[in-house]
Image (cartoon, rainbow, N blue to C red; front, top):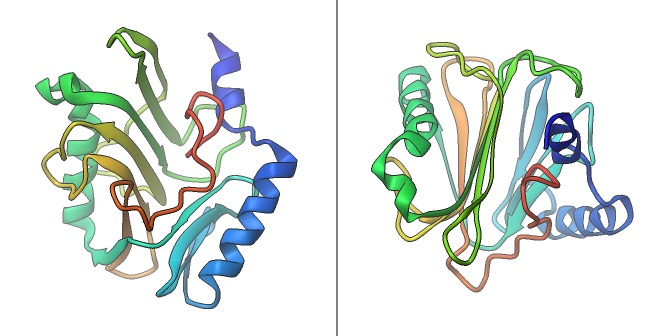
Length: 201
């Protein structure tokens, strides 16, 4: 797929996506806001969402069941290392789809500097349809944001779900936000769910 993959990875369907994003924001309502120079997130009792500052169309979230907590530097780096290693372990046999996006600093959408992006997707017969990597992981470097989307038969070590999404936002200070959104409950509404090869999710 070459360079086209990463460009499509960052694009959204303007009309429908914008309407759904506005609706989700209304449903989440007022809540606690967490932000840095890359991304902002809102968490309330109704749901949560995040959006990129320089690309508000880059948006995801959920209404319904989710968990959030604060984690420190060591736990963040340990979790991210486990998530990065998932495709290189036996757990991959249980995976239908996995995508990991890590953002270390501001970047333009045509450069892979300051990001790491991995995506694997299987077909109905377990054949690998997509496996793509962009950028370089930076061990021991606290990212400003990361997001994992996982569709698997069971939860891997370090996560509380086999099907769902988790995202992380680095805050000023020593505590950083981690949100986990399982896809296993009927009350979860994942409004922007599309294959990651056509949109970051």
